Image (cartoon, rainbow, N blue to C red; front, side, top):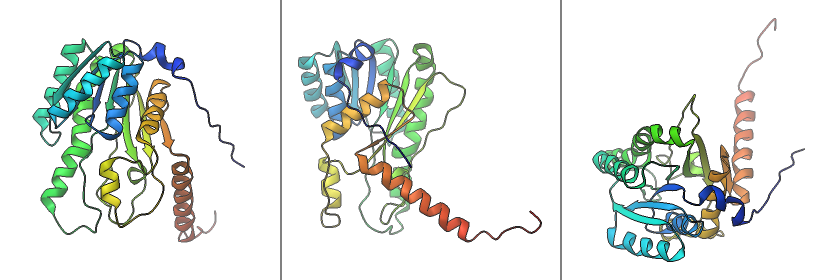
Length: 259
């Protein structure tokens, strides 16, 4: 029997840890990243946000300041460019005097279809969805170790288990012997514009609100959880899939003699 405790904490619980905290949020021009920025702003954080569209980021920054952010700055960048990823990290560390939270939320999108052999697109996805994460983590690690900080990685069920039309979407970070916490956030279907457009005509299921997903991510990162799932069904979907894989694997293992 499995017992799962589900709790909803008040924003006041995390106001102390986020107030004045130095936070970098990537992919923050829209969707979950934008909502993450707003939640951090309400809690009084110091923010640097980044995405490709500078004009949209400027509007998000303005709203963050209205909501109570101690500071809010932006830098436009394309995470397919290693030099841009480097510039973002340097800018955030210099402007904020270090980092307490690195929230990696950017993603390179791929059409929801069978892979057609587009090697260049695959290379682009690898740069955006994996290499930029590793590069930014490596750059942030020294300052995060000084602040006993946290890395929050926004992922999804497809980052845990592969499905049709989504073979190339997966990323992973691994670190050892560090006081920096890593929180992997496994998300289901969230009602962002990009997600809704991508699944149109393929999937008909309930999408959960981006602002609720963002708060769940903030909660998990601030409490230094190693892994979190949102909405509720992602937990069961992943562990059901894992148990099925184990059973299938064991069915092919022949018992050893004399054991």
